Length: 209
Image 1 (cartoon, rainbow, N blue to C red):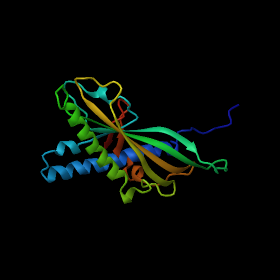
Image 2: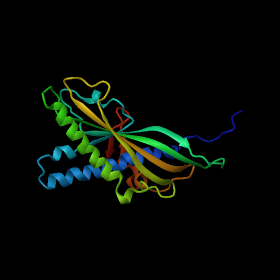
Image 3: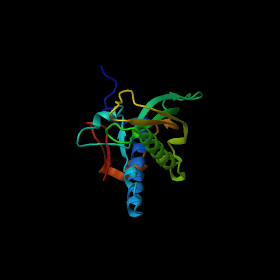
Image 4: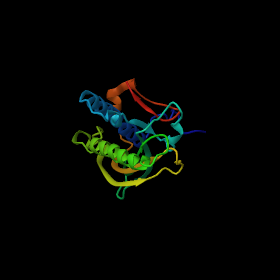
């Protein structure tokens, strides 16, 4: 006979933290693009950054009519219980969230496509770093649950399935977040957005508004 008589539909705190990071990036990157357009920046397109959740193969989004880059994908890498977590229902946890930034110089081969892709990838990584590292997001708007956050590494590379025709560069930012699991989340960006945040079931694309 089952002992649990309620539907287990509430996301774990780690899922909410991941989605909150994605929401913060979607909101702030959209605003950065607006500021770039208002300022007449000739490279305003570089600030039009898509945000995805748990999409480890964004290159598949490229086709004759669509170029999704630059973009950042937010995914959970691992989460572990800290030493000293002795209570049954509340655990001090540390998670690693990967912020994978992708950019391309163009969608056809050329001599400088790789260089352009690298420059744009690092530019996008700088935007992501400055947003997540901003003082208002010290606790990722989840005070009482998140106890700290730190970006611990930046690693450059190429996606495993990149092709010579589409020169894509990737910067992986490792975000470490300490938090308390099994504590109810009653505020934060996701609650402020209400039903205006959606994550596509098809490709993990994040939409706000």
